[in-house]
Length: 117
Length: 117
Picture 1 (cartoon, rainbow over the protein chains, first blue to last red):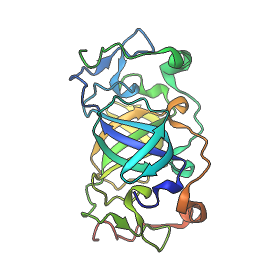
Picture 2 (picture 1 turned 90 degrees about the vertical axis):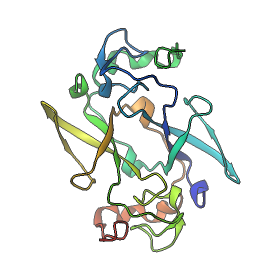
Picture 3 (picture 1 turned 180 degrees about the vertical axis):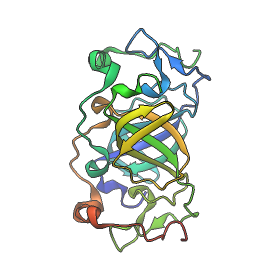
């Protein structure tokens, strides 16, 4: 974890270990219509890999204390990268079907549709 | 690829297939000192997974035309996700050792140090 504490934000890459095998068309939480899976962030996808940007609060030994986490407890972590605006921040013009749906984000909870739970 | 064409930017997740097994300390291109691998974007890492945000120009059948690509030709793609500012853009306070080095980014070329080439 050397040098990681210099970064205020990090990228977590993880295995969506609870995701059940899915279809190439999924109905995301944010929109009650089918979309191509690669146009969604749904966990049930051909390679069930997730990424999240989180704020790094502090490091104690091998334990990272982070906030803004949207990841299920016990999720296997595959990689950690520093979050660097020069690499990771882009000004977008279009966010497709999410344009009219992303405002629902703060109100959305997992209903188990991707884990069979 | 359904619905993906609505997004101006996408995230590519791929396998750094040319990366040789690495150490937990690496000397990145941008700084001639050793840093903890998880504080770098070096391809030689315990799980050699890379991520890049690219601009999506157009889709023809199963072929994505993108620009701003920093990925080696022939790299196996693991996943594609829509790039969504609400998920992916954060305002950072600190970028660690990169603070004094990220300005070198436009001038840096791969010298083969991570692929043994």
